[in-house]
Length: 230
Image (tube, rainbow, N blue to C red):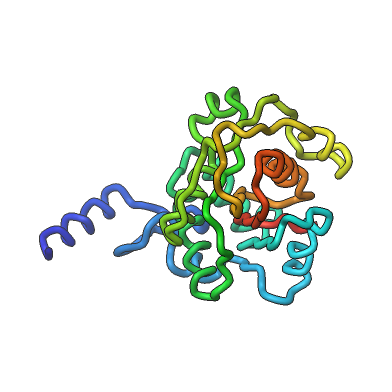
């Protein structure tokens, strides 16, 4: 064990592993995000204005029984840096870790909803081919590892290639994703969690709910890693 530790320390010295948030070297058993940054990530506090904004984002969908976001996304902030590493720099470990952390904290706070399946928001095949993976799949897998709720990255497919939602008005976002999702496999579960990276207007997640509802799902819980600050 001591030899293994010495070798690990030597490797870290020659090829230092750095925190994806602060760029400082990781030490010991730290993985992907250093301990200080994990502790200081901007969590959505209960009863805060951001928590209330998340809670009421899907009031027009009575089937959505709960909505939960983990972190606050701000421009040039810690969360943006992490999600940029996940989506554009190929660091899959960020997605697995954030999903796992979220699942652990929801279990600890006893706010994990009762659900039979976790469903990730799909990418269109063109974007999937360009990126090589779906970041929401990684979040769902990490969340599943923490909660032991099974997950599926194939339940939904995105059947239309859509323009980015960035810069669009709320109305334009809803129009952009209207009818773009369809159920790809039989859904026997009546209560599901839909997981994604960032909650903005909720247009994309709402479109997922509509597709799954048409396939027979009755109860929905929306969970995202972050909510965008307006």
